[in-house]
Length: 266
Ligand SMILES: [Zn+2]
Image 1 (cartoon, rainbow, N blue to C red):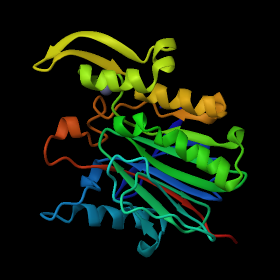
Image 2 (cartoon, rainbow, N blue to C red; image 1 turned 60 degrees about the vertical axis):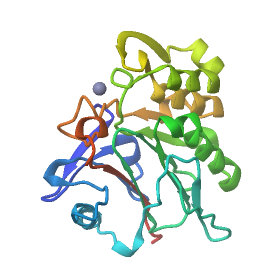
Image 3 (cartoon, rainbow, N blue to C red; image 1 turned 90 degrees about the vertical axis):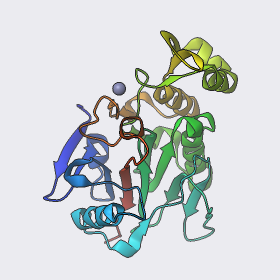
Image 4 (cartoon, protein in one colour; image 1 turned 180 degrees about the vertical axis):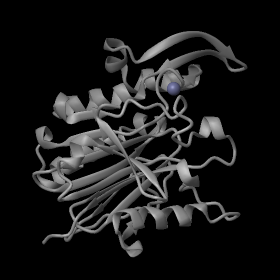
């Protein structure tokens, strides 16, 4: 956890990346912990998500009207908010913006949070990338949009990977393994992405897949530099006392949130 710090108020606890804190005059960011009963998945039967959003806003002195959370559906749709031509999707798993005071939030319960930031051009991208999003390359698509639509340089983009289910706990069967093999042929061949295990379940043999490494390789292929790619190295399953995990919590699971917001100009 050398690249992250834990912070807390009386009501909410969250993780921050040291690399992004270097730019805290311009940028607010956080990844929430589950402590204090915090959770961001909305259920009609309780008010936990609303209360959690309120506590998150309070911690960062954000006006609740500034909150943006898209309808996440494991897509590769990325909403873009800017002065010229905003692009909004009914379902989306990422938000890019160069506008201040847009409190972008996404929710996670084992899926990977990808936080992209260009400190030169002051552009943020807050991305939700589960295994499906990873096969659709949503992380690298977001970075590409930052370059193409906002004149970012790949070498300036900082990428932080939040907590997620990691390779050791991400066991899949042949169906999912084959999707990754077909989608990432060369990457899978050259790197230690897929590992056979001695385990099996009712669907057959099980494999482990390193989805974080795939994301990292794709971003490096786009031109991001090693030292700007920061991994929290935290597994949500192994750290179930800190983070919500769908695999651990079952049907009525709760979710962690990522927050990114550009501060207003002085
Ligand atoms: Zn784990």
